[in-house]
Length: 248
Image 1 (cartoon, rainbow, N blue to C red):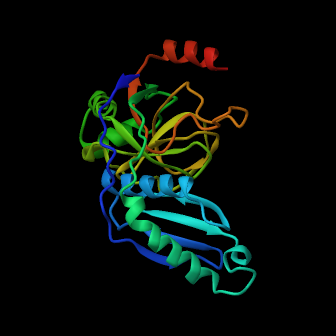
Image 2 (cartoon, rainbow, N blue to C red):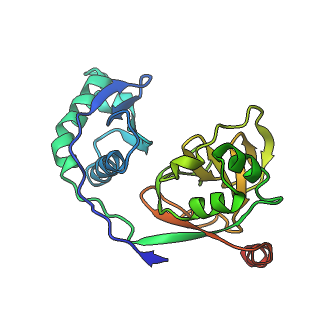
């Protein structure tokens, strides 16, 4: 891991609120995916963690939204008030203080070893052809940036990453695979991510890490968390096999 400087101030956003069913409110911080939007969502999440309201169940951050789940009976004072309006007003009142909340951010870059191509990355040749680059250049460009973990989703421990080289953006497969092995690194449009467990998937597969990304027995089940930065480090097949044995 290496040190990384990271600003922690959250920018001010015009936040739109709307109901999701009868027990959740969605706060929308805009339509564009960006590090600034991510910090604003992280700041509101941090504020909610420090100042939970009666009836709050959980909150789920995503690319541009934060969904807040609540118990309608508790937040309505046992049916005396409309629950959505009460929660929405509470969240609106939190906005100024939440936007001023300093966010604790990781100060290290997590290194993810990846064996690119071959059986681990069967779509590397397709990505290279689509980008008009040799496979070696695709690997170099994919391993060059520091990626931001915007959120964990799709499957437990699956990180959605921002920062992919625009030249590597490649459409999803027209026919998804029935099973993608855990640890496989893929590209879908302008995104890249890592399959945290064996699942079906339609991303273009370019490599695989021997690291385990999710284990429910761990105190922190997901290896990666929203807000972290990571870098992919190319490794050989021999190193992959060695590290996989160590991981298992």
